[in-house]
Length: 632
Image (cartoon, rainbow, N blue to C red; front, side, top):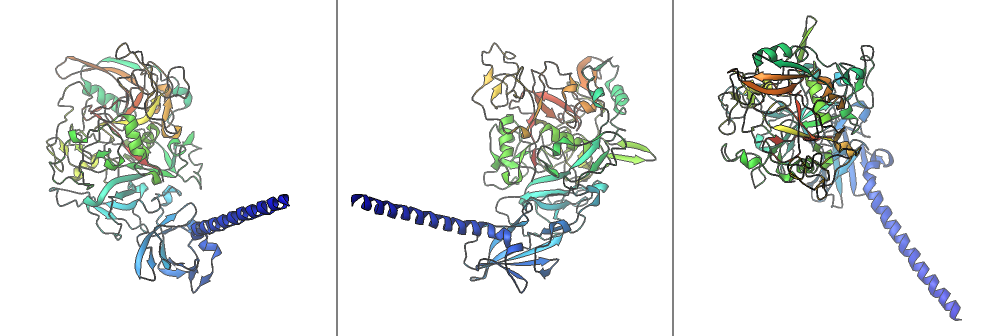
């Protein structure tokens, strides 16, 4: 009898458990269906009078080139959701309740903040412009997060007086808002927090509503300038001895490659592939910068990263003198302070680890990260091509060098009025002039402000569509680091406990700054996935260039030279390592300086440039900044 009661009791318990599980599954099913139903509307919902019916409380209306249609236009036909004209309406209260974003991978809408019982969404699709030259590697606007823009070559903001340019306008994505064949690169912006994208195509976007500027680098292949066997001999440099005049040597070597050897480039998407036309002319590879994230391209910060010195979240100085260069030096991880704009002070005095995580946390939905050395190389090669600063006329190719930002108080977007004709000799000379600009939005005695259209010589394209601060300004740390001695695939933290990046890891030269018993940073920040940095073999020499990687803009810029400069007064100057492209600085990673730096400094003259590469220890320093990349 007792056994029967126990069985009945157990059966009841089992029944309750089963009933509970069924309820949970049913509820979960409704939740899952409600979550994913949005993505099924194009195939699994009933169509009534041209409208797709949802679950009874959510309706869709699709428009193709302003005409209502019964199905979502196809991605393969070149259509894209126009987020600025797509929206959802609460039918009960007749008011807008949500903007619409678009998932390009799953090809469906992503809606947020839908809490009403009856909603209708109007989705407008337009056929977007696609330049044939890119073969599908077109700009990815990150589900509407990035706003496509054009930048005026002839008119600028009212607060700048003079011969100006630089005003920003919302682009019409159905027209040719970019054209790489004409050196017109695609630009996009991030609007500051709280500003809704209500701008119409052709409408000016005020500078005070712009938080950051980015430029699209399309996926491409390039023809190798030399072969791997040649690169392996680059461990030695040719010693040119003392020169009677550094300017004459610079002029002699400048034409070796920098002015005449353009990279041969062909664009192509990862889906359509890259044609084989280059293969008949020599060995060609897809640039490795696009392989790490398996992308059709990436967005590069148009300027060195700046530090927002306002406390209220606004992105413009209240007046031109309210910010200063010292106020942009902070060794912290703080993505809320990121601004990428002209006429701000570069964010400096920051360890590499803090720079990385500031970049990483900036826009996670767009795969933001600190620029890698390989990505710098991709920009440099594109610049050194017919799509950047090179021209072919009568069978002869010439390439203009990107002009240096020679402003010693680190104002972004600035340009030297004259191109330097000598390298750094530890002093300011007639062949290498630099100086301070007294406040923002102003020209200096030797420098142009970004809004002065003469500043375009400092762009990677020679016009406002290009990238700035790639020569001079602050040194820029890259996510490129040497591996620890005898530890394959283990990056070093930095030189010593005194000078390091802030990442965990062994020190490359623990006793370089005193008899320190600490050989490893055990309390630093964790390393990210290896796709976020480039790793190089260990060495104690800064001349073993064969350790570079194809595509990163190091060993392919040889052959290299060791020169002794003499200053104007005939005193013996410093010894320098330079490369063949525009005689830019060329010094590789070593145990004493295991982190990559690019671009050179405002004071390095001819040694600064987009082809310049050097090294440092990873510490926070007042001369070092960083750049942010997005890979949607």
